[in-house]
Image 1 (cartoon, rainbow, N blue to C red):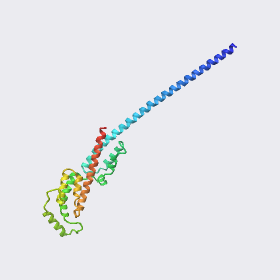
Image 2: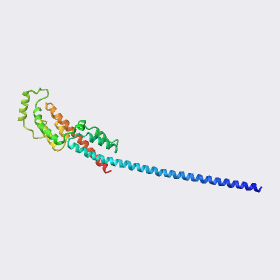
Image 3: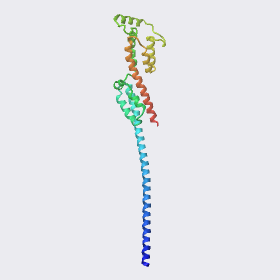
Image 4: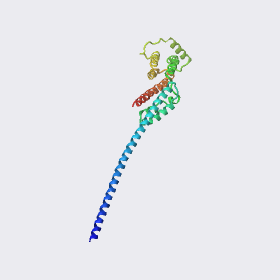
Length: 239
């Protein structure tokens, strides 16, 4: 009986020991799981911070490149050079800053002729306008569809030579239109100059004027786009 009681006590002790060991193991596993979860949280937080800093660094780099690209575009336009390469570079830099930016639409909508061949500078537009004035004065006196024979051209030449110039900007005559264009070009207002020169209608001067107006409008559109790009470059540089 004593041996039996001793065995029972021993079994109870062993069972209690096993239970204690199992509980200790369970507690250790729970502690390890908690520590691993905490470590994962720290790792995830570090990854998020690293990714955020990487994105910020990429955006900063792209913003710097974009600002340089806007300067390169300004330089090309100031020389009347093609701008295809500058536009493609700006579109690439813009993807690293804002893929859905409205500026991508602005860049894509620039005249194809300007992108490939460049556009006239303000000085060149002035020079071409000065060279056109005599021809426009002459052809503006010959109606469209008149045939434009030698007699018509001779009479128009004499009339343009004898014509008294208008002194104000309010009339619709050719001299008034020319003065308006001269005024707007002197002010650097190319779009307004193109609109004013487009007032030459219904005469054989229309076709001659149309080519200059197209070139002026291309320049005005490109200048407006450049202003937007420069403003955007400035805004992202101070963010």
